[in-house]
Image 1 (cartoon, rainbow, N blue to C red):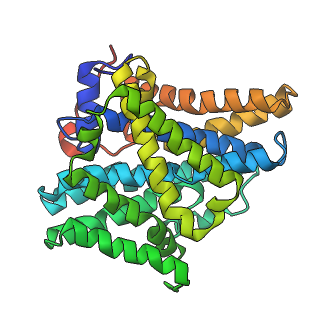
Image 2 (spheres, helix red, strand yellow):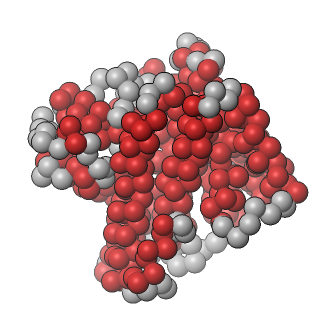
Length: 356
C-alpha cells in the first residue's frame, strides 16, 4: 500500500531511480525507520531547546539518554539488514548507488545547512573551511558519512567471500576495543565507525535468518507488551544513568532495536498509522532537512511570538521538522528537482514523475 498522496508511478520511479531500491519493500522496515526518524527529530528538538526554553533536569536528561541509547543503532541495523541484497550485484553498480543515495546528499545538505547557519550568524566556522567535510563530517551528518564508509567496507568484505558471521565478529572486536581505549589514530570518523559498524553487521546476521519475517508472524498480543517492556528497561537504565557506562552501550542498543521492531510489527499489523510508513519511506529527506525547520520554528516561536512554553516548542518543532521536510520533498517532486535529495542515475534523468 502506497503512503497517502504518493502515486504508484511516483513511488516506484523515485525509489527505484534515485536509490536503486529493491523491487520488493519490507513494510515493517519502513515502519521501523518511521519510528527511528521520529526519535531523531524529537531528540534534536529537545537538545536545541535545552538551556533556553527547556531547563535541563533529571527528566530531560533521562529522556535524552533514552532516545540516544538506540535510535541511531536502529538505523545501522536496518541498513545492514538490507545490505545482503546488494552483494550479488556488480560492485560498480552498488558503489554508484551509494554515492548517489548517501554521499551526494551528505555533501549537498552539509553545504546547505552550514551556509544557512553562517547566514544566521550561529556558525563558528567560516564558509571557506567547508571543504573539510570531505574528511570531517559536521553535526548530524556524521551518520551519512559513517553509513557510507561502513556499507562499502561490508560490501568489499562480502565480495571477497568473507562470511557474514566473520564480518560481525570483526566489527564486534572493533567495538570491544572501545572498552580498552585502543587508539585508532587522530581521525575521529574511525571512532564513530567503531561504535556503530557492529549494529550494521548485526542487521546482516538477522537478515540471514529472516528475523523480520519471523517477527511478522508473532501474535499482536505479544508484540506491544514486548515493545513496552524493552523501552521501559531502557528508560530505567537511563534513570539510573546506566546509559553512560560503556559496558551497557551494546545491550541497551540491541534492546531498543528489538523493541522498535516489535512496535513496528504491531503498528504494521494494525494498519491504521500509515503516516509512520511515509516517515520511514522518506527518512533520508527528513533526516537531511529537519534541523533547518526545527531551528527556524524555535526562533519564530521564541523571538517572533515570545512563546517559551516547552510543550508548545516540542510539539510544534517536532511536527514541523517532520511535516515541512516532507513538504519540501513533495515540492521537489512536483517541480521535478529530485536531485535536491538524491542524484539521479543517467537512465532516469529524462523522467518526469507525477503526483496523484
